[in-house]
Amino acid sequence: MDPVAVVLWIAFGVCAATWIASLITGEHSWVDRLWSIVPVVYVWVFAAASGFADTRLTVMGVLVTLWGARLTFNFARKGGYTGTEDYRWAVLRGRMKRWQFELFNLFFIVLYQNAILLLITLPALTVWLNPRPFGAWDVAVAVLFLALLAGETVADQQQWNSHAAKHTAGYAGPRFAQRGLWSVSRHPNFFFEQAQWWALFLFGAIAAGSLAQWTVLGAVLLTLLFVGSTIFTESITRSKYPEYAEYQLRVSPIVPWFPRHAGRKAATI
Image (cartoon, rainbow, N blue to C red; front, side, top):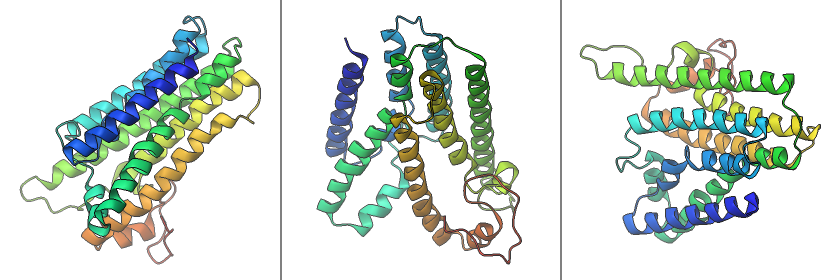
């Protein structure tokens, strides 16, 4: 079967399942629980369609599987598979009427986010349509992807350590992560997450012989999603921790960069 048809049917099933589950349970983090799983499936569908004979597609499948395994582990240790809902949805429910939030749930949480999960993997479609020998540029992109994966692993571990330290008796340190990678970016995990999908896009560009590929849309929309999510998340964090405003003055929003002097104006995200 055409791999495009296969992934579209899978995406349709995932959308239906997550929407129905949200209606039955009254909680809205079902897409989050599949976020690290369905992109892996999509990429391997394209690899399978090539008969696993396309080295580039197989490498992409392995890399995305490593991404998914790491993200699944991190999500699981935070209690993501135990029925815990994203705290931001409760905040939004408090600001919206019931029917407004249900529309938001259907069109943004379910449909839009699942569309992004499909679109970010479609460089695999570009590769499938443009079989070309695996070369030095592919090796460089694979190394870049692994470096970004390592960066996200370190960032998440530093955040985990920061949260764990807060529950230690006599702890008098900062109330949110500010050390290590978090001293040069307010969201280093977000940076590395997005960058991995831009790197995956490069595999498609290499196969097609041009950066002008429509499949860049996935990486673009993912970046925009993270921008909006960051703005909302930081507004909540600022309301909980007044000192977060000073942290915003000093530290780059997303891209790791040298800390600023506290007197300089902070970025808007």
